[in-house]
Length: 338
Figure 1 (cartoon, rainbow, N blue to C red):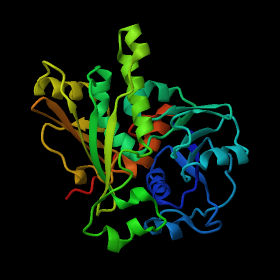
Figure 2 (figure 1 turned 90 degrees about the vertical axis):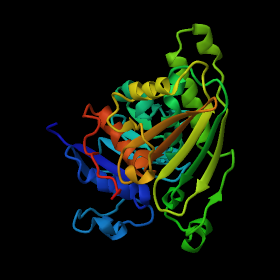
Figure 3 (figure 1 turned 45 degrees about the vertical axis):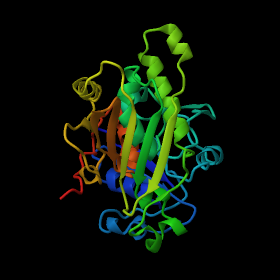
């Protein structure tokens, strides 16, 4: 495109903000015109994100500088306050990386579309504002979306997923301290993680859209998702183990074809016939899934980078769709594996 997209990043001092800078500074169709923060005004971006030394002279400030799109990298519950307290032109688009608009996207005259590209690609192309999904929600839904779209979720879904310490944010707390995290693993928010609501809501939406039975569309039940989140002793990445009761008559070949067909047009999500590992996706916008069938249960392994496909990369993927760019523009990244 001839004219570059003017981008502002609000709250860009954290891990997600740093990842956005790394991606957008190398995006051929983007100019970062502002980076706002309440804690580091006047500070060079490269002083906060030290890996960007020599990459940018941008400093954090207050002004948005008339952007075409704002990425909100604020704490959960703060995005609504930002929208209320800033003079944002109606023409300016917003991509929120928090959880303020995921469940109810109607706010302040804007309608935020749930931005999981693999379930709402065409809706996102037409969207003015987008609510970026959560990291765990992304990894788990990539495992379950093909089942939901095919009407094959007929029982409870069981999930155990482990995440890196960056998922807890940049501000140090006891459970991100090196002495706690190193050589350790622990459960948190058992069966009560905040991403469960958006997972259930979107799986129902996908199932209803795919249903050819109008009555089934109206009466589709919300799937039960039993989720055990784990803290891992690594910095970044999510690995999810997801299983549910298999549909009668479905073979392993049927399931693998289902996943291959569902993700056939995706530039980032792929089914692997072989087992997968997290390092194959860390530092990229990719998602990998692997399906197995055993004793009447279908099991799906799913892995993503929590800061890229689970946050900043997915937000840029959404921006590309919203502005009519190729979906993978600026997102062809090398994984950390070997």
